[in-house]
Amino acid sequence: MQKDIEITLLPHQVEQTEVIKQKLAEGLKLPESRVKGYQILKRSIDARSRKVIFRLQVKVFIDEEALPQVYTVNYPNVSNARPVIIIGAGPAGLFAALQCIENGLKPIIIERGKDVKQRRRDLAAINKQGLVNTESNYCYGEGGAGTYSDGKLYTRSNKRGDINKVLQVFVNHGAEPDIAIDARPHIGTNKLPHIITAIKDTILNAGGEVMFDSRMTDILIEFGQVKGIEINFEEKLLADDIILATGHSARDVYELLNSKNILIEAKPFALGVRIEHPQEIIDSAQYHCDIRSEFLPPAYYSLVEQVGARGVFSFCMCPGGIIAPCSTGENEIVVNGWSPSKRNNPYANSGTVVQVTLNDVQGYDPLRMLNFQSEIEKAAFEAGGGNLVAPAQRMVDFVNNKLSLDLPKNSYLPGTKSSMLDNILPGFVSDSLRVALPLFGKKIRGYYTNEAILVGVESRTSSPVRIPRDKETYQHPQVKGLYPCAEGAGYAGGIVSAAIDGINCANAILTAS
Image (cartoon, rainbow, N blue to C red):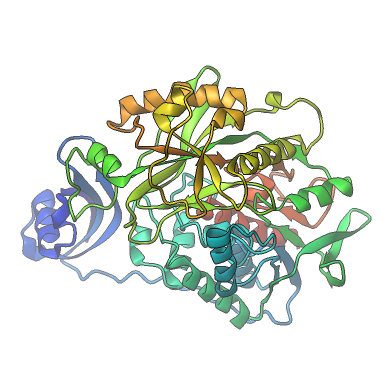
């Protein structure tokens, strides 16, 4: 017999098997001898009261042995199967490829960047020298933006597809099994590259193909039907189905579509800064303690405030993390954040952004939001003075419209320069942040402090362009066989939701066959 039950544990009890069995027996009002095993379904931290606890959803095996959880997928050899071109080797592209193989189709992944090993050299040049390789950086390359920006797997996309399948694929390729049960699963930048490489190997071993240093420079279309693509202005690759999974930073793809009169649309996005605190401030506030227990992970937060008609919210919060330079072009500053698996750096950072609506940027050009985004990033570069030095300001100084005389130590390796962020951000963004930050300080004790630094700019929260598609077929309304996918098309936000969208696009191709 099996029963599901919730139990609560103190942090130091979470890894104690005998304590868990005792709690399960007490909760079920059974002798402990009848509890033969258990399976943790979900695990979360509850820090709402002064005593922090873990909540566990558990499947209990009563009078029968626990059945091991095994998730296996049969990937047939598709070397000679019908080809599907997948543009982009991020989570959407990789999971679309795996699903194509399951469906008996041959995926051919085209990636403009390099593999994970070679990307490391380019990231070192970004961090240490401020040099941006426009084809290989934090956003472009094997695994996409998530590979070196930490692998947070939290998502609310429950209705879009099978979240558990995505998590289990990661586990099967080397991720810790805990990601399948934690309420806020996280892999870590130090571990994710090896997992991405293992996924690529699965694709290659099944007869799929992966091409690096291969940028799509044209889409071949005949009579409203895709026929293939051009690579690096030279080679042509033919197929009747193309999954466009290029991520939200491939601006040349939007420009290509627009030049070919393929319908794209301007899309709202969010803009702001990345805010970094000493991690101990966040730990103290969230766990109601002076020093965080060794049995608790570094604390996170999620904040939102409505300022007039605009939402102001935290985004991509990185406990124990690092602020990273994520520019994809020259003379622009874009910042993001990541954490290693242990989240053991002394700082906590989060994007803190303001909604930007279509009404904020006048006109009808489908690229107007993208151009607006680009202008802000260039202004940030100029304010920093070059070499990816980022403009920054202490939090209270920003709210009081005061230039910071100095800046706190921080994790942004290329360096920061004291600047008036008002000179970079649009007025409605600065004004909204100025109202929201003190209010956030009322929600988290110690948040509103001059020990916190605001680093500009956080501008790539989502795509400023949407590539439309049919809700049922996932195909572009004008071009048969073109499947706009995930973040770059405006239909996902994060690793798991992008992976799910890639799976859905691959299934749509099978359905259309």
